[in-house]
Image 1: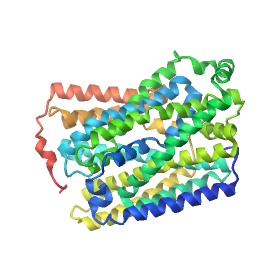
Image 2: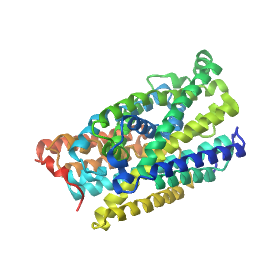
Image 3: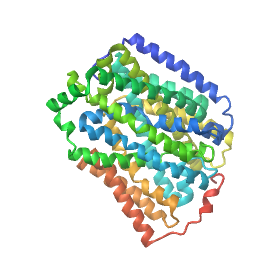
Image 4: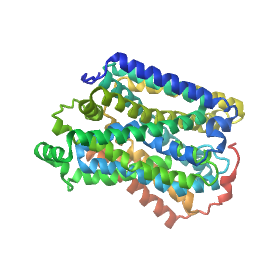
Amino acid sequence: MNPVNSAVLSAEIGWLILALFSVVWIFLGWFWGRKAKQLDEFMLAGRNVGMALGVATAMATWVTSNTTMAAPQLALQLGIWGMIGYSLGSIGLMLFAPMARRIRTLLPHGYTSGDFMRLRYGKTTWRIFLVISLCYAFGWLISLGMAGGVLIHALTGIPYQLGMTVILTICVIYTLLGGLRAVIGTDFIQTILILVGVVILAWLAIDKVGFADMHSAVLRERPELLNLLMPAAIMFLFNNLLFGIGEIFHSNVWWSRAFAFREGVGFPAYLLAGLMWVPIPIVAGFVALTTPALGLNVPAADMVGPMVAAKLLGVGGAVLVFVIVFSALASSLDSLLAATGDFITQDIYHGHLNKQADEAELRKTAKFVIVGLGVLTWLLCLPRLTTLAGLLYFMGPFVASAIWPIVAGLYSEKANATAASLAMLLGTALGLYSYFAIGFYVAALVGALVSMVIVLAGMVFKPAGFDWQTLNGRRQT
């Protein structure tokens, strides 16, 4: 079912923008992918990504469509803490900085986060981790596909299903052509577009409405949005912090970059990307607080960002938000397609189905997997059964339950496999229970807490004695 049509741009302009993006990104995918002939080149960009590209790809990937569309939604629902809480996602990037350095040192020949779990904890824990990671990856892929369809429909009136199909197809094609090289190269351009666009949008919003009018309208019509003691908003603040940390710590999107960055680049690249990311959701969320002053009737909360921009700035604003969100969407979708493709190829196909596959066969398989991921995501996006934030935070318990097994496994030889397995299983189960019993704003919090207690108890009562040299293996057998 499509959202209510509030289009500002004509469908013709929408198709023109999509056509231009298609040509540019697909060409760049081909151009940067010409050298990606070997497996390391296709999956990890030759393990030689420098500082500028490293910062750009980390930041652009984390500035997802969820940031630019769900942050306004959460500001509309939870007020000031909604957008500030979302900005705490930057903590995950900054905390991953030292982890990226350690990952590169401990696993110099690694390909995926699954390699670490298999070598560190054994096959049972590894397989539990595979299920959790794939559930999260599909949840994120679906949210990105949905965001593309919602954006295009809200701004141009092009049907949700058709717009979502076009964006998915574009990202699949250029990721297929260039692998991680194409992903990182396009991320650099997308980062510039996002930063410039967000600054322009915020400045124009303040200029058109003004702080005084915005504050008085919110105070008159939605005073709860200014309440810094709103219980749900405070819980969301901590929940989102843990959710963001869990997303980054466990996802192969970030591990693949740790492996791809040149030695010594991971720490400063992730740290700088985190610092640069902080204001993005605050600015995006701030725009939603103009809704009462503008008298907008928002039919679906996740449409508030595009609707406000279009109302404030007319055709120019609609084009600007189209460029911002499309760039954010593509920078995350291509990264997730590439990283999840690597994950399935290495950990499912190579790890379980064909252990004797050579590099040429693995590279070919990775391309088939990327296409399959695109098709499956398209099928799951068609119904549009929930909002972006609703889908995103349903995945919170999955990712939060993996935080402590990963951190303890990287830094302490005492972490044991049994506790790691139970931490992920029980953390996910109890987190999902709290999601339905209490609300989305506590699900990741509960999952992380349960996981922490189990992992720490395992280290105290049944400490393992792990040999770090075990992680130095070249390939799985």
